[in-house]
Amino acid sequence: MQPAATKHWPTFTAGDSISSASSFSNQHRTMALVAALFRFGYPSCKPNAPAGGAGARLQRAERLWPRTDAGESREKKGVVDEEEEWRSYLAPERLEVPRQLEPWLEEHVLPLLKPVEASWQPSVLLPDPAADLGSDGFHAACLELRSGAAGVPDELLVCLVANMVTEEAVPTYPIVLNRLEVVRDATDVDGTRGWSAEENRHGDVLNRYMHLSGRFDMREVERTVQRLIREGMVMHAPASPFHGFVYVAFQERATAIAHGNMALLVGARGAGDAALAQICGTVAADEKRPEVAYTRIMRKLFEADPDTAVRAMAYMMRRRIDMPAFINDGRHSGGHFYARFIAIAEKAGTYTLSDYRSILEHLIRQWGVEELTWDSLAMGGAQDYLGALPPKILRMEEKTHDRAVKAKNRPTLIPISWIFDRPVSVVLPKCYSYVL
Image (tube, rainbow, N blue to C red):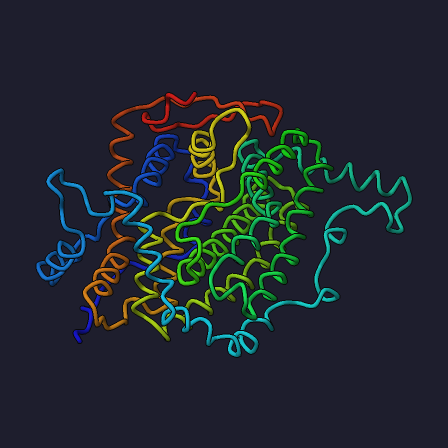
């Protein structure tokens, strides 16, 4: 057994992107980041050799990903190889590891759930017609809410819809999680139902705010919610608990960051909507508990079976962790609209490429990936891949930005149905300009 060489990786925090949100007004930078986001997560991203010991690492990487005559990695040979890889994680001896965690889950995870009586409800954060306000008081409270909402920029409204729609698709998530082997017959079924019940409030409070604000075409928004639930959720390796918990741990943190960034951008130092800032900040704080829960579960899996856990994490990161489903406005294919939405979110600063990178760095630290000692070639390759990925994302971001400045692409006005077809100005990569 050989220890992995010490890595010196740059440290990023979610706060970095929040504090620099105003810098995203640069249209060319937005285009560059969108292009990078669509590239770095694809299977073609193989591990780069960090400084020091590069020769040995490169030899190991070449053995793990042998080149074909066409110069493509083995991963690109087809879906069959991909399915064979993740199905190997369903071997009985591997599934026995998460199955033995049930007592631990009861002690360390389920207590993170709040009792219903101790949980906030949407009516607390919004004007309540049943409260002791009278008809005039309720009307005045609604006018005050609308006054604050009037100053929120359209690009933030679009991102708010995406945040809300993702929360409203809660019925889809338990279905997907309950398909995971072991989870379907373990204590975490109770946890999945509990988290789904808690998060149902998030979509409710955002939906009601949007309805009262008068800034949104709610019929179009509601159609988007129905469309998202109907089309379902796509996740790589859909039956493996190792892959599934990597995904949800990453996604819960991403959701918390998106809501937290929104709270700052619409608050007193931003658009000045105090009601929306309070709502988004409350939801962001709420998202931290399921994030902690799933991060703890995955950390325990890393302790019990580091080989399987680190390989599952590398598998998921090679295929990129996106939103649970492509948001579709009904006018374009999901992928085309998603490209536009990524550009808008990057420009607005609600969820950025640096956020994605910071989440990856955070989970690498939380799960002790850099401290693992590898006892198989595959495990060592996965560890090297994950260690090289954050710096690679940063380098690609810088290079793509330089190319974007030289390209001098012009901003494009994109009409968004959710806000009555008002156009949002954004720069799209050339490779996506044909979707307009």
